[in-house]
Structures are given as C-alpha cells and as structure tokens.
Image (cartoon, rainbow, N blue to C red):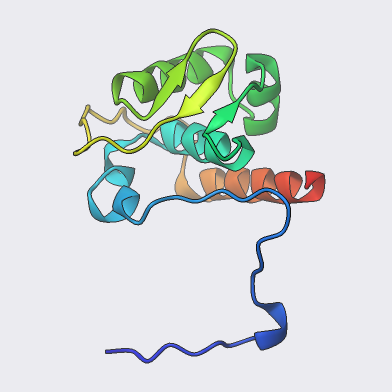
Length: 135
C-alpha cells in the first residue's frame, strides 16, 4: 500500500468561500464512465457553481459561452443528465442531485472533431481557472 504524505505543505488546499464536492462513488460506481464528454463537462460545471444544496441558476447562454458549447450540445447534455437522474431543472434553476443507487447507462456517441481528450481537458482547465478567478 502506498503511504500518503503531503508533498507541498505550504500549498495544502483549504476550504475558503464556496465549496463543492464530488462523491468518490461518482468514479467507483461507474457514473463517470456512463457519461459522454459534454455531459461530464456540464455536470462538473454545475457542481462547481452550485451552492450547498446543489442549486445554481446560470442561463443557457452563459453556460454555452463558458463551456464553449453549441446550444444543441448543451440541450443534449442537460437532457441526458436529467434522464440519468443526476440533475433536476425547472427551466430556471438547476439542482445537482444526490447520486442514484446506480448509473443509468446510455450509448456514448462517437467523438466529433474537436471533442478529443486534449480539447476536453483544455475546456475543463479553462473553466476551472475562470471559476477560481471569480471566487
């Protein structure tokens, strides 16, 4: 077993201001693997911007701008997350829900040009950096 040690004690993460979390089950129970890249990006965004109850109210145009989604990509990802019981949406407010007992699987669409891992990682990095600047 690997023994954990703090590598950079002066750079330890501290909870300041808002705080979001992703349950470890999201990875270990297969939820991450059940999502397309756009679904993962939207889900992580909604986690980052939500309050302690999982609520957020970003408009679709703000989300599309920040995530560099086309409107159809946003709608498809949003609707898929609703069907997979990961979020609720009333037309204005999003709620990130407690994870269901198991992931709902769907076929993952074939990648489109510009949707590779490098491009998605770049989007996540830009989103994270922008969100951290706003905190």
